[in-house]
Length: 307
Length: 246
Image (tube, rainbow over all chains, first blue to last red; front, side, top):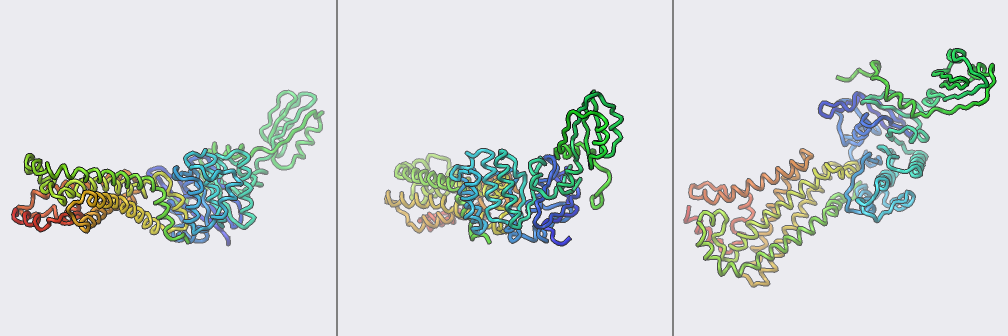
């Protein structure tokens, strides 16, 4: 693969006796919006902190723009915008003072974008950081991550703490950045918050990547939830064996099932009865996502490379 | 990439309140102490005579009735190094390890500043803060010396101030370094404070060691900061008395 912006192989990170990362392999292509999903404590933030050289892995290798975060140093960090998951700043200073300072530390890059970005997100720049609500603090983080128009955005839970309207604004900002050619690596523990903008997602669980897929494939995989009502009670066995149909439940004349792939066989079987109601909705990807959480640790897969 | 000294000025801005309060407090306290000198000049000789000589030696009060002796015993030998060290050790522990523990260092760490430069600029901010606080002592002394028309040269006051600055900067930098190595504010504070207390004790006890020829006192940082002579216009006399005792 030629143009990977982020590439990690076999990242292992231990905190004392706790293994936070257990061989993480990732590859993020230039120009894509990559979702990094998993429950809290799965290793998302640890991975992100390694990419920014805030942590150094116990084993394995991480590369950003083809260099390790350590070797890349300041020149590499100049190309990255980072939104921490848990943003803390000096509470006595105003948002404006904090952002101006960060722009200065970046050699002035982005100073002129503080005003417009703050206005867009409705951030009052002259309030002290300490007096800001969680959502407003998150906005300070968003402004500082985007203001210098970096080539790579690393966003740790960017939508958390924002109300739905601002989540939308945030996602628009991400899409605009991608249109300008930026690559976005964003973590979340709620898939539905990010599925509209991500091209591909990796799902991490207990320090291991359990799946990497594009969002459309995930959605197809998730299938649809179908509900049918008939004029008379129907026999479950008629439907249970149909191709692509799973989890059939029948209560008298009401049938629900999960449908994967083409609906043809189900429709033809239903047509033998009088259908009084029909509903099919895309399954929430979160449902699918949840099933990963509950999955027992897989024995197959990337054990190689770990001690 | 990064504007030169952006981290330095940022660190000073973050701590400007603390530094300003310390400046005011140190200035006021030193001025107040010096204002009592006329009382001490009159009562000092009696006081010295009424106390056991070992205490006088330990507290370095032998010359308390003279201007240089008084300034050394109270300001430059006691209050300023003690409080100045509290300030510098506190700031030294906070300005790197403390910020790291609080998470407020994170965005600077991910900015295009090398870690080396970040470290240097933050230690520079510590030194600048120390200069302000040591400067408060020097300024208060000069003001009071002029106001009370006290018999000491300003050069000696300056020398004492520089000695004080180097002392507190030294302790602060030790705390800073301990914090840089461990990343823990508590360890930074403890290391700096332990060093300061040990030097004070060695300095006080060292005064008893002269007859045997061991010169702990001369080697301890506290003694060195005052240079034995800096605020002491009767330097020759005191050295003479030192010599006659050894």
